[in-house]
Image (cartoon, rainbow, N blue to C red):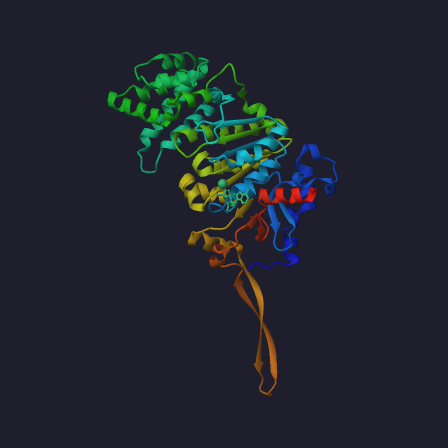
Length: 461
Ligand SMILES: Nc1ncnc2c1ncn2[C@@H]1O[C@H](COP(=O)(O)OP(=O)(O)O)[C@@H](O)[C@H]1O
Ligand SMILES: [Mg+2]
């Protein structure tokens, strides 16, 4: 087992209350000059759990990036997503495939700012009270490419011929740009997609961006059969928006307010991005999250490097509903701009499926705090963790009979795995391993919100 002495608490000292508070005063504009001892626990950073067995609270800082891997019902929502959301000091972005986190945090978050909800599939049965200008993302060519990438990425599989996804991507980039130049909406894009003979988007593009127009023109002015295949692929990528109900969330509307990523970045608002599963609808979640990240990173740059108050981005079920293709590469960039991504997965393999071996490895290395919970029922991964946790030396004493008839005592140092793979797989529910860059592995007790609530209620009685 892990050695749990005071010395070990000392090794993770920078995550304990006073050093954590000191880091917060350095990273948050509103805490400048405040004495670390006067800083409330919620302001000391991202709650990870309590160090075992000392019980001392450990928190990650506002420049960390986070990755949690735990089996279903291990406490991802109750012990990570909900407490982090409730204590978020600035803007909060949350993805979820269930209503639980939304239901538990909505009241607290609406006391600090506006709560926005994107729920195109009725996950929480929330009536639409916002719209997002998706086409605004196509203001730049790069923005249009990223937008198209989220949709095409959802229909791309490893086996598919990349020609079709690339062609669908190029077509969508052209159509998004044309809609943007023309002051159009996603509805126009859908209309243009339904008819390959429709020349309006090309005409608009030739007027404003002849080079791009020629590229799009030459990639679609081909044999009719191929052309209709390209259009079919692009339609499949955008199929979520065939439904009026879904389309309404991303097209201008005179009644409801517009969700503005730029304004959001420096607010204390919350956006809940809800989606049941992957596929075309989840592309909207990924696209909106990406728009928020871009706007927030730019706001951070404008503010001299990082956001004055950190933005928390809790990406629960990220591998299914927030599959931003280059999320692993964005990780450290976001951390340095004052945006804390907290990606929550059910297994390492789930991450590999979404981002590939290379991508998942990159995300693993780029996350400065990793929380590994119970139920890591993947023998290879458990063995990898065991070797990461490392070995330590233990002193083993032994007595041996000496020639003179007496006994001599000798002590020899032996190398032992701190936790073997079987111990990792059999960790107690409610506990987790914490891997923090540059620090030895610690064991923590998770802090589910319902227990904190019970404690708070009994304390006030
Ligand atoms: N309000 C509550 N009171 C007591 N136990 C709860 C409460 N909410 C959830 N749990 C339990 O906590 C455990 C972790 O749940 P959850 O965090 O939702 O898991 P997941 O990792 O799938 O997100 C589950 O066993 C669940 O039954
Ligand atoms: Mg959950």
